[in-house]
Length: 622
Ligand SMILES: *[C@@H]1O[C@H](CO)[C@@H](O)[C@H](O)[C@H]1NC(C)=O
Ligand SMILES: *[C@@H]1O[C@H](CO)[C@@H](O)[C@H](O)[C@H]1NC(C)=O
Ligand SMILES: *[C@@H]1O[C@H](CO)[C@@H](O)[C@H](O)[C@H]1NC(C)=O
Image (cartoon, rainbow, N blue to C red; front, side):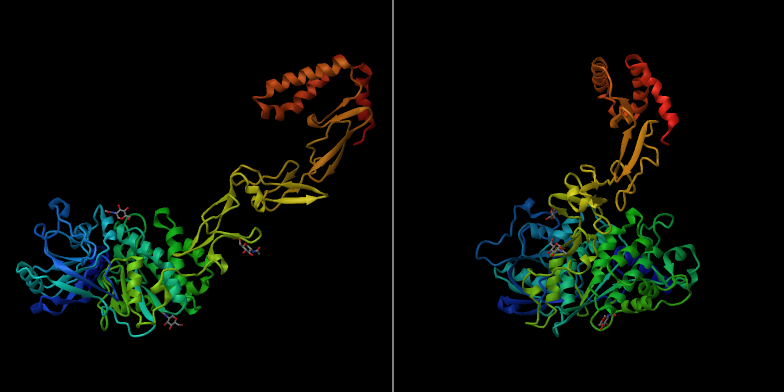
């Protein structure tokens, strides 16, 4: 029995169904003509497309001449159901069988049908038409199905066909107004999800939904219109296996709470245990956020975690999660306390409660499919898409108590006003990466005065490109003394800060003046007198000598015309030769010039000058 459950659990996790108590969600179908079919019938809402929760839809039934199972595109048969101006929408009646329900709906939609009525092929209670269970190569059409689909009984389908064959017009009204309870002015809803981000289209569509729906969810929660609770499915390892390798790697708390391996490969990547831990952390984030009166932070956490800590980048861990938690201003200690010790041989109250909640009660069946959305204790059917889900949520309010968001999508909020939404910001420069959008806030490095900031948007944004020094000096050091300003920002370099010549330091917080005299980096010739200044130094030479700064040496003022012009010829020659190797030239010039000038001086200067040199030294300034 327990082993059976475990198997079922594994199967359902990946393939999405199990023998739990499954509730078929229904809407009603009212036939207004022909007369002998008049009445209200039940049909089952398909788990794809967009059911018009809270609304009704009027149309007339068409039974195609060919392609009656709608497994092929109707173009191939030259059939179209596009509504002409003033005409009633077409509800396409098609047969069950031979291909996926979603293929049928997609073909019908492409041909212009407004809704699909699938007639069951055997006499049985209504079932829920679901999406294909295995992954399919081109599953992107699933998200594009926007018409509602309903399964009708074989009996009703046969009656429709008979009436149509008699030339009767079959008018029906699909009605979803009572598909969800709507007792009061607050909607309670649950989202059953999973932190695993590597299970293909199913995981991708869950996280896509959270990102897209976040804005609306937060507004509704903020204003008290909804009470949202996230949920996570876990399973226990059958006791007989609790010490097996599989259970050890998939479970925490001695086999009590497990999730299947994300890659379905025990030997590599993340284990089921990592997923359970992350699920538990998300539950605790919700608990702590809810207790702080900010339950909507769950949406930010889950979105940010999926962006910042994906499995792909090997960041699906506590360290990365903690950074996200801190950026949202949540109390890490309380969350750690809530998580408890995953190695302890004891129940975790949070996960225990989740397992209990999996079992259905009242009108809600067991939760066995991920993701599952439960609205006012009824399972939502239809695609997981912002507009479709919002429509369903809005149908859960007692009439006239719907919030404005249900009536219009134009809504005003600015989640960046508080704590910059947890995004990167620079107080000094008054810039933030927080951007308010309809889908809630996003953390994205800004462009300010044409300067692009680059970084992850959460912990880091740096101005880059030209003009970056204009903004907060590019985040680099800058100081002014005696009306002289030095800056460590290097224009054009993407994000480097470099202390200017005459300074040393990291360039960001600090650049310190270099004492050239003490450090003996300049003005070191025997006849030089050195004086340090801020960012530079002064050097003078004794006697008749003149200090040549660029060569850091002293030369005599008393040179002949020939000497100077000869020197210039040499400089010019050096300049041309050195163009290509300027850097090398700069680096070596001091040594080079030293010997060169001495050689020149030996040739062209009066010998007594030469003789004076050592005397200066011996009289010493040092
Ligand atoms: C589904 O819609 C998207 C965007 O509207 C489009 O890019 C894509 O091609 C569509 N897929 C199919 C199979 O039509
Ligand atoms: C969240 O907080 C509200 C109000 O404090 C409370 O009624 C509700 O039960 C809490 N939800 C959960 C799941 O703890
Ligand atoms: C920061 O900039 C925003 C708009 O960019 C402005 O509204 C706000 O007053 C500024 N704050 C400070 C402290 O300068």
